[in-house]
Image (cartoon, rainbow, N blue to C red):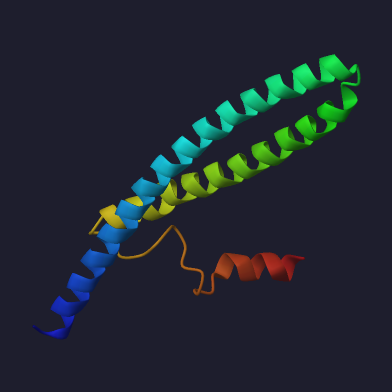
Length: 120
């Protein structure tokens, strides 16, 4: 086996592993969202009962609101990463005819950027 065939075999193996792990990660993320939603509803019911019995709803409301913000931030961030991988990486890996990644090569000096810097 020559060098190019070895590289092609390695690339094929790594591409398949990345795509397989991405799909597995999407399933885990979906399951995590469902589990967290169910636990949050249960937590909400428990907080409501405790707050109603104690007469002081603020002690349970403050952690509840903080939990909402934290969970929304975490899942928005994870969904954004999922979107980036699904939008940029997976189509690139699936398209064997595309040799360059993305629209721009970050290592190329572009003339239009140099002109904008000189104008400033």
